[in-house]
Length: 54
Image (cartoon, rainbow, N blue to C red):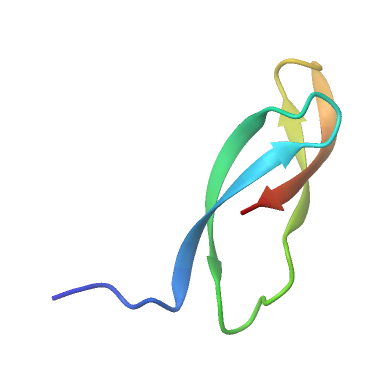
């Protein structure tokens, strides 16, 4: 049985160093805008804003 297409994998990119550090899931139905989260960046060694890439 196939998974539903309502949840998709998205990649989060650090706004400071521009590296793609995280992969997460989001709901297409509930969250139509791009995600923006505070996550830890190991390159910057601090918490930075990570935005969804396409």
